[in-house]
Image 1 (cartoon, chains in turn blue, green, purple):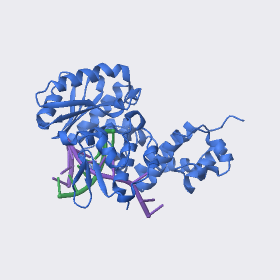
Image 2 (cartoon, protein in one colour):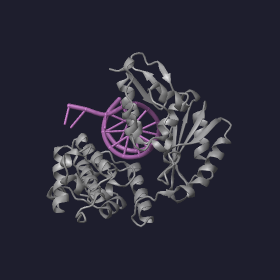
Image 3 (tube, chains in turn green, yellow, cyan):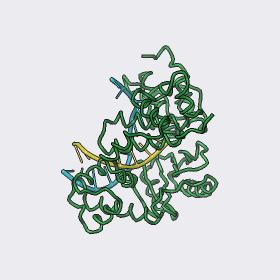
Image 4 (cartoon, protein in one colour):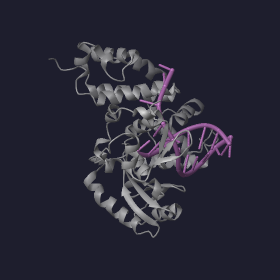
Length: 341
DNA sequence: TTAGTATT
DNA sequence: CATAATACTAAA
């Protein structure tokens, strides 16, 4: 078998790049999502796309591939080229993707900076922010410019690279010390580490802490004041985000005891798992959020105190956190007849 | 109050 | 055509 000209990871990068560019262009969100979804499917594929393309159903047999994406990927794996991406890059400067990567700067802001200020690169943004040229642009006040400058400085201090994911054994002591400190708060009834750390991932981009309390504000004030905290990014009545050493982000979410299970489920993720679970709840005429599982027609709480209750009320066995990466197994379970739409 | 971004 | 739900901040 010949070595594939274009590997699966190459295709993943290409699809993600297309999604970024379409997003900056303000393209239909469903289309953008289709490219991102297709990228995820390719990333989880067990076979080389070039093999699949040569096989029976062709690329249309790949989940998440419709006619448009199948054709583009087919061209890419067959020829190693994709003129569509070239056209897109001619229309939308690809350097905008670097700006899009700044925390707090999303697709709308990137599009506005490009359209109203002609800014297409990090350097141009830096220069404009430094000399006060940004203020007065739509939805850009002094505070937002400050945040952009901070994000630029943080990026420069990393040498322009992306935020570093940390190996889990490096995070274990941090998680333990933050949990212990939070547990020491008189209003904290229970503290759990959630997120990708709880899912057992070997690297984590941040740390997610869940606190059970009937005095969320007091606990979150305490959290933001911990000695490990270098900077408070946000603090509201139920949630706070901070940076600890090295600009590593830690999120803390406070919920009442009756919501503990639903909140732990939500905060553990993965995002894809949550979307599947919540979609399943809708098909069963219920709504799932971090506060509980509720009947749609009267809003009555069906579950929420424990994770087991939540999964069970959705007709599912409790799924261990390490198996919540791949949403597939939720779909495998049938929706109970009694509550099916 | 709304827009934008972020979070799982 | 069309996959969840909510939180926080700054701007208007």
